[in-house]
Image (cartoon, rainbow, N blue to C red; front, side):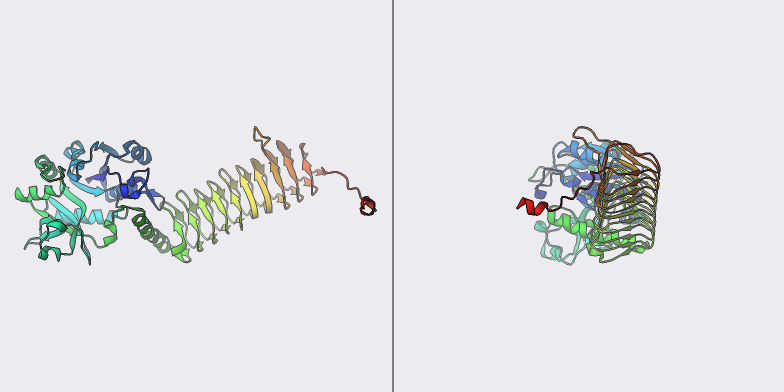
Length: 452
C-alpha cells in the first residue's frame, strides 16, 4: 500500500501546442493517464496529480481517476510536491513520486522499486538508470556502502563524476514521514529561486537517514516526453509493447510494425490481424477472426469468426461468421447479425441487420431495421432524410430487393416480399407480395432517325 504523487503541472512549451503536454496521447491514452494507471496497477491506494498549466483542461480530460492538487506557480519540483502535503501527511506507507510525462513506466518497475526500498530500510530511494551516454543528466554518486551519497548535475560535476553512467530518472520512493520532514526543511537556495526535490535527499542524508538507488532494467521506462519527436518515439515503443502482449496471448499479427492498436483493446486467440490495420480503444474482437489489411475499428464489437476486409467500423457490433468488405463503412450505432454479408462499397448507419442477410455491394442502408435472410440487390438506397427529419425503413424476413431499389422512408415492408429491380418504394408493402414501382418501358422505334 502506498501513495503516488504525479508531477503534471508544467506547460510543455516544446510541444508547441494549445494543450498541456501531459494530455497528449500515446496509443490512445494521455501521457499522465498511463502513469496513473501504472500506479494503480502497482497497488497505489491514493493517486494525487499535481496540475498547474491549463489545470481545468487536465482535470476534465483525466476525470475522476485520481485526486488533484494545484501548483498555481511553477517554482520547482520540490514546490510541486509541497502542494500535496496534506495527502502526504495522511499517506499510509510509502510515497512514490512520478512524472506525468513518462508514459512507459510500468507497474512492475514501481513495485520493484518499492520492494527494494523496503528491503534496504531506506528513507528515500532514487529510481535510476544506467546509460551508455549520460551526458546532460544528473549523476548518481554512491558511497562505499552502495547507498546514494548525492546527485550532481552535469554543470557541477567533476571530471570523475562525469564518467558516472548512472543517472537520476526524476522518480523516487520516500518514507512518508521522512518526506514530510525533508519538505519542511526545503529552501529556494539557488539562482532560480526554486524548490528542488533533489535537495530533499541531501536534507535526509544530513539527518543521518539512509538514501538508496534502484536502477530500472529497461531504460525506456524513464523516457520523458518534451516534444513531438519524443512523443512519436514513445508511441512506437508502446505500440510494440501492446502488439507483443497480444501476440503472446495467441493473436497473429502480420508485420506488427504497421499495426496500430490502442490501449484497452481486447482480442481473442487465433484471430489474425493483417498489416496496416488500426484498432482503437474500446474495441473487442473475438476468436478466429480475420481483420484484413487497411481496416480501421473504433469502439467496435466483433464476434467470433468474423472477417473484416479493408473496411471501417465505428461504435457498432458485428456478429459471428459475418463478412464485411472490402471497402465497407459501418457507421455508429449499427448491429449486424450473424452470418451476414456486407460487401464492397456498402454503407450502413444507425441500423439493425438481422442474421443471414446479404448486402453485397454498392448499397446504402440508413436508419433501418432489416430482418433475417434479406437479399439486397446492387445499388439499393434507403432514402431516410427529407431535409428536415430522418425516418426509418423496416424490412421483414426473407425479402428479395431488386437492384437499384429506393425506399422513401418511412416504409414498412412485410415478410417474404419481392421488389422488382429499379423500383422506388413510397408505400408500405404487405407480406408475400411482389412490388413493382417503376414506369412501364416504352420503345419508340425509328426515334434516332427522326431526331436527325
